[in-house]
Length: 424
Image (cartoon, rainbow, N blue to C red; front, top):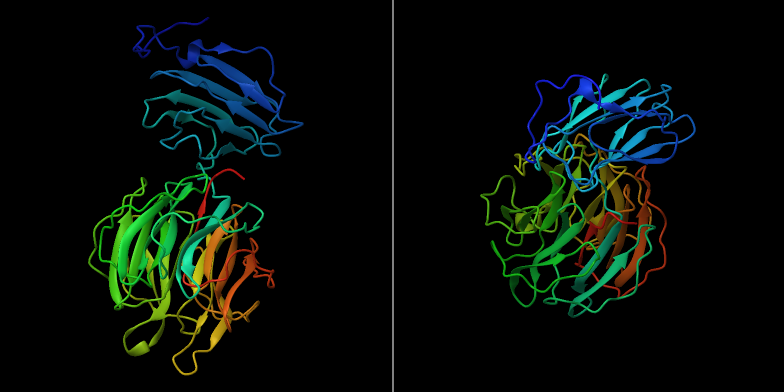
């Protein structure tokens, strides 16, 4: 090490952390697609030919410091990606994506503690915020085909639905599901021969756990969505209830929260936006009145009052995210007179604005299920048309619903679906 050591942090090991003035500068310019760096060093990163993934040390102490320099001002063409190697970066786990994409940028990071991890001391120009990873796979489970069911069907990152997997947990219908904890899912509530309140957690390999004793009012016909990137909210349901139940990042369902908005059942919910908001919309209220109003949910799980609805009022529909920060709600039934199924859809912007109806694609049906998959796409599957169906319709990352694809798995309705797994 060269330079004067002064005003430095004393680390827990009893050694003094190196200051920026005393960094060891690596004389070899890094040109490869990967590089592993060490604390107390500065590095020149040349991305003229390729993107470079920088792996930080797997352990660090307060005051450890690393500097990275865009050697030939090419990060705007070929970015660098920071792999924090098990440690947090700006308070986020290493599953988050950290990229620097500005030409001429320099990055000076210092390790703080286990909670905040590595923090940029300066980066010359504004860096992109870490981006939460997206779920790649999905799971459809439970439902009804004349009898309550407990089987599931996994969906891969290409939107291919797998064959039936023997069920775990109480067979039921009228339940719903949401992603939680970033890469896991939860199914909860529903109807057996009575209203039900237990939940079943799904790990990041798509394995459904056994029943977890229920919390909150037992009910069916409710909806659920992810909010705040790693938590979930269940809301509304049978008996035109308007209470909600929050789910923490460990999959624990909270007690009832006093309701906001018009109580209703068989509605839709989904996340939207870049900050982890959610929305409940449509459904059926008292006296079988179809509803098209909405209730927005903040990234803290707070439900807002009713907002005027757009689109055909209906129930028995579902929603999914697409394109990273937008959503779409589709299908349903406009009952009660003759109970006509629909195949119309409504896009939801990244500000939570519901658009007018889009002409339908695919088999008109109700009580289908929907989930995101592949990071930025969605899938609708199953439901009731003239009879139980297992047809599916994929949604691309522009929100366009594709034509019917021949179904796989037991045809059924009133099932749930959610995304899981960061791995494709």
